[in-house]
Length: 149
Length: 169
Image (cartoon, rainbow over all chains, first blue to last red; front, side, top):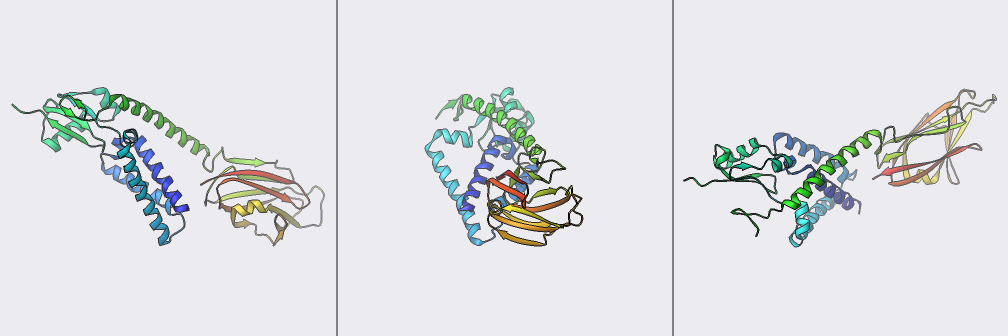
């Protein structure tokens, strides 16, 4: 019973902390975020496994995590409310070339980030070429270019 | 599907504002938790450090109020010197069964001469070099359960101290 409880506790704790930290923290991965991810996985591993190094324990932990994930995805499918709170909603950050400053600061995205996304995704050069920039649920910024005349 | 401008996007600015507000509150909560942890709410630190009895009492106990499951912690027992010089060079320290059931003793410093099982607990018998001077005994142990742990240390035919520890899972 214990590995199941431990894995469940770790799953929900990490989910809540990552969600609180916001999309920018783990969504758009910078090289340091990768380091952070490694440290988090290392720190949670011991608590999930405990001092029980049996195969059964390992299987139970993996089984628990995957089952929770499936369960949660089914729940999200059914309830809009849970879906919103767990995965969030996309947010428009730039509308018709105009950056929405207040939203951007709350989402911790700056104009550089948007221009970078514009360059990598669409080959855009300036803010006024962007029709929409959206902070997606995954933490990625997507850009839609203004149609060129 | 909702539309914002020409974008088909499920945007909900009211929810988003609420989420952002909650997120800032949660950040403060995270910092508060870390400060509390620093102060010892989840283990060693000033909030956790507890002492029962005085330095010159026959029996004094120092322990951590908050412990962690499977993490080492120490009970420090201070045994005062006898006012009247006695020939007796043995100190008999008793630990309650209920407490011993919840922990695993890793080591005792100094090592007891003998360990005697008695009803309701275990009696550790130590040799004492100088009965006039006080002695300190450290019991290093690891909690094996979580929740509230009730313990009792006592000197044989002497004072006894009750203590409570909270063990986090």
